[in-house]
Image (cartoon, rainbow, N blue to C red; front, side):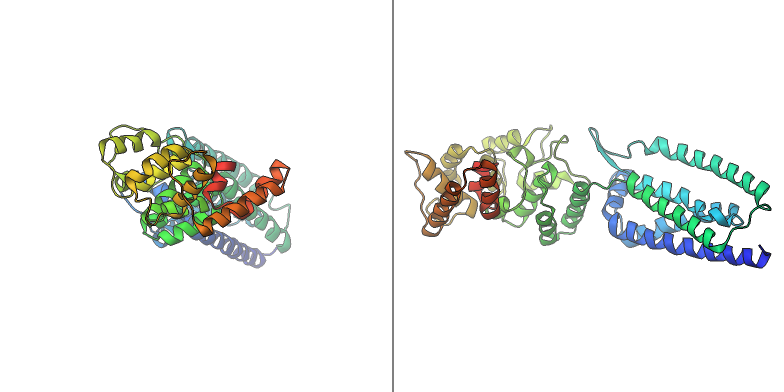
Length: 379
């Protein structure tokens, strides 16, 4: 292969790899992992700095480009495997987006140990390949097609490696996006994301309740979302329900006071109730906690002390009262509504239509999955 053709191939390969790499970087950093990088910066800075998508993407891209440039200088004459110069950048990129949820919180998992080990192994492999190349380059001549294919495959392996070793949890991606939107006070957008998620994880349930409460819609719409069963998911407990980077103190201060010691949602809400420390949103949090735990008798007993039961009531409270009226032989409160009574009659008719429990459950969820009736009887 002539010197001119060799230079031409090298330039073509470098251009091809650069186009592939920077296209991937843009979509990966700016679109797919934007919220993960916000969490990464939050952890690294101890919450003292805030991640900016454009600045962050640009800064990381420049640093990865400098890393590749340094390695690429060593492999500039190694056109058949020039794309290997991007591997350290892929390794660092995977480490930046490799945050994992563990018992003690969000951590970088094994990356603090694996990053130096991976880069060391890479350096050893490159030294060996360069020695082989020096000894054999006069014996082999590669066609441009072979060079393009080999480098393209290496880049694709790099893309695959980054995607597989980074955190691709759909649930955590959703949580991070919702927390970012909450930080920006874009509550409607956050609720749209939660509605589409159709995921009843404890943390997403907590965020759903909190976002609805911020909009004053908690007792109107909570059961229209996919939520985890039970009231224990209403507040952070650092085990099953937790914030990623959104300050949990904002949630506690929204409801009442920040607890001096960590306690579950049941104890926390009961503490606020007994000591009269709840703020305005607390009322609905407390009542909805009773409904989530299916303590419908307690709910009916407490509701008149917090709401005028003869006046307008939120949707889920009316659903609960109507259900209670039909379930109890001697109800302490009798609630009727022409429209809701007709809906509940249809609910019961549909229940009696199917003998198979699984078929019945699916049919009820499709039609009445957004009601407290379905939650109480089928969740």
